[in-house]
Length: 189
Image (cartoon, rainbow, N blue to C red):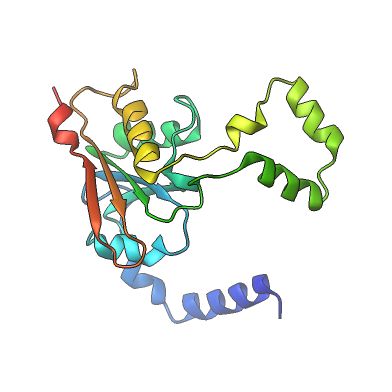
């Protein structure tokens, strides 16, 4: 059985048994917060439990490394929408130790892409189009560095209010311990 068939078969039973009812909530986060975190599979259930979050408590945005790589990219758009349209009053940027973005090597990623069928012509065309794959596919040296950078971009964004707390934390993916990197209350005006 394929993975998609397995998921759809399970989903049919989930809906038929009305198991979704325990998750019913509104689109507005009950704790009025938005969380930017890493897509790491270890955090799927661990992070919400470590933060005492339940379905409906927070808007959660995930990407590789909890990184805001562009001040006008999709991550920032999601944060801005959460603040202005969905009543989020605080932002939490939460990275984790042992992150795959730590020391990410762009040459290795590109080599893997080539092995999976991406041609040299595509890589060359992207370069000639002004896309710097080396910098785009680069991570950070330490998780703390990535969190601090993302917090600073969000905190100083011209479309966000100056009284918006932007917190930075790192979670241990083994124990769930949260280490505070930046207390966003210290920066609000």
